[in-house]
Length: 132
Image 1 (cartoon, rainbow, N blue to C red):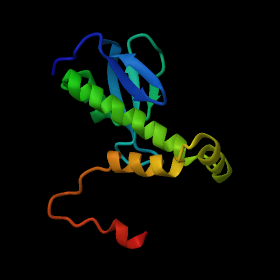
Image 2: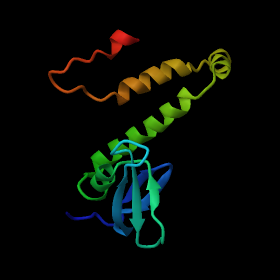
Image 3: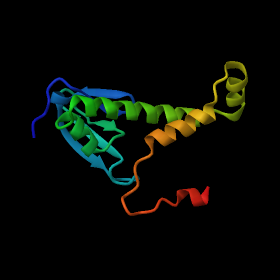
Image 4: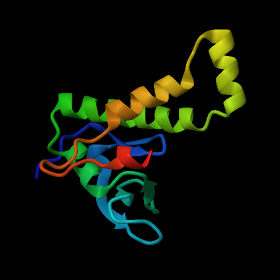
C-alpha cells in the first residue's frame, strides 16, 4: 500500500494530521463498538492521538482515496458535525432563529439526515419509518 505524502488526514474531533507522519493505527474497542475510535501513532508525538474515525477510514484517506473521494468524505464529515451541532440547538433558540432570522433548524436537520443517510443493503427493506 502506498501512502500519499503530504495529504492532510481528518482524524475527527477537529484534528488533522499529515499522512506521511502517521506510523500506526490501533482500533479502540473498549466501551464502544468496533470501528468507532482509533489510536493514531505519529512520528512526532510520544503518545497516540485519539481519533473519532475508524482505522479503515483513516487508512483509506492516507493511501487509496482519490482527491475527489477525499473531498467528498471530508464534506460528509463536516455535514455530520454540523448535523450533530444543529440537533443540540434548544427549542427556544430554534423558535428565535425561525422567527427572527427565518432559519428553520428542524428543516436543516431533516435535510442533512437525508443527505447523510447510507443506502440500505440491496434486498433488505428499511423499516425504520414504521417506528417513528
